[in-house]
Image 1 (cartoon, rainbow, N blue to C red):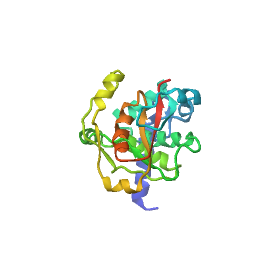
Image 2 (cartoon, one colour):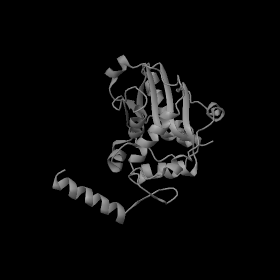
Image 3 (tube, helix red, strand yellow):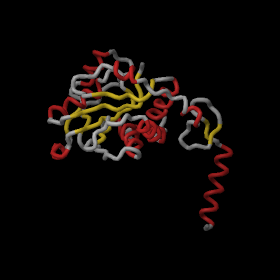
Image 4 (cartoon, rainbow, N blue to C red):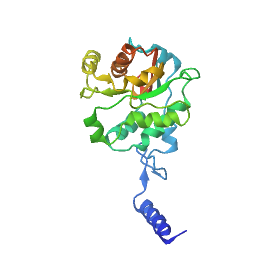
Length: 226
């Protein structure tokens, strides 16, 4: 081990003592760089099959699978992931989503397509959390990720305080095919995002894909309200 490595390790050790990581949920000291302790990760509640079946499936989606209940823990994690720069949470959420995907939900010829951000929002945030979630999923599900197929062409307002009709109107014409040449080899797509509420965002993306003759389009998200 060279001197530079030793000094770096010492620096990291001192920093961890002076500025320990604190769990974002229970506020206990932790060693994980993901910033949520194992106990709080364990509090995430998978949606029951009954709840998932009760979800209204928008017209251009073939099925939806929101993995977890939208609990206070999930809300805290997603808020920090999207608005506090905690990108490591996204990949970890993806891993945990992958553990709960039912057999047969993802076709062997499918591709994961993260819902894209509008370019201005992508630059402001520095990353697209849906892409990172998809990367976590792909660590356990052996299918490729495609981030070039569709693009966001409308700078929509946040959906948080909109009702169902307003969400639908907000997402009208929000997406477009970015590279039509890819469609020759894609027949099954799993759209990936953080939260499924009314499905307006997913359906808007699925609309342009269905119009381009993609045969099967499913939605996979981290969470959904009960």
